[in-house]
Image 1 (cartoon, rainbow, N blue to C red):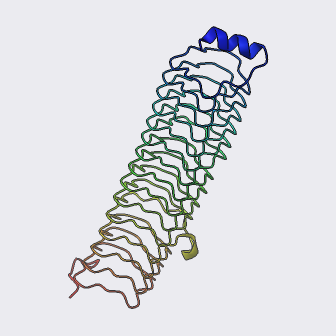
Image 2 (image 1 turned 60 degrees about the vertical axis):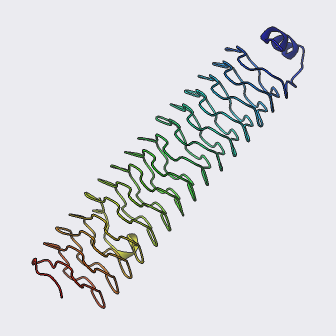
Image 3 (image 1 turned 120 degrees about the vertical axis):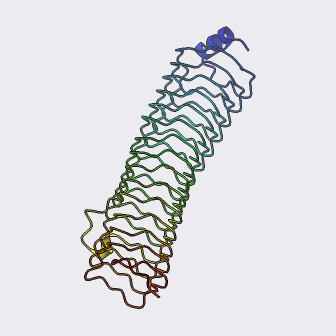
Length: 320
């Protein structure tokens, strides 16, 4: 079907254009609200500026399509293939993108507020400037995605894949990252205040300058993570920063402020804590074997039953 026939039939009241081959079609700035394009092939199509509010785009093929500034509010894109599509400046507020494939897509300045992206694939996608307030992002694949400076405050990212993602300067305050994979990601100056990070995997991530004030980090895997300039300055009570039973083996926490933090039962073998402040911290039954604690401040800390074998002590001596 050519573009003229489609527009004419739509003007006559027809809304069903499902299962059609519409590859490379040009539908720029047209009004096609509530149109049914489900299961149609629109690969390489140009739908820039088109009004597709409330459209049925279930399982539609939009590979490499251009949808710049299109209106897709409340549209159904469940299972749609939008890989490598250009969705910059698109309004997808309240849209359903459940299990949609957005691999490598350009989502710059996209509005995804209140959208459902559960189990969607956004690996390698560009989301700079995206609006994601209220979006459902649990189990989403955001590996290698560009989320630099994005506001994800309060987002549900439980079990999400954020491995190798660029999250520098992103706002994840109050976000739910339960069992999220954040390994190998860039987290410079990220704001994780009050975030729920239980069982999250931060292996080999760079948290330089990160703010985790009040975050819940029980059972977090921080193996080989870079934590220099870790910002916990707002912490005043042990219950506010919970690193109990965390794996911090070989982590770099040089100069970290961990006043009153709970590190009980943590695995801290070969950790770098030189020049750090752990005044009033709970280190009960923690393993500090082989750690470096030169010039560290442990005043008033609970250090009962800790393992300091071969550790470098605050005065530079080696513990037997």
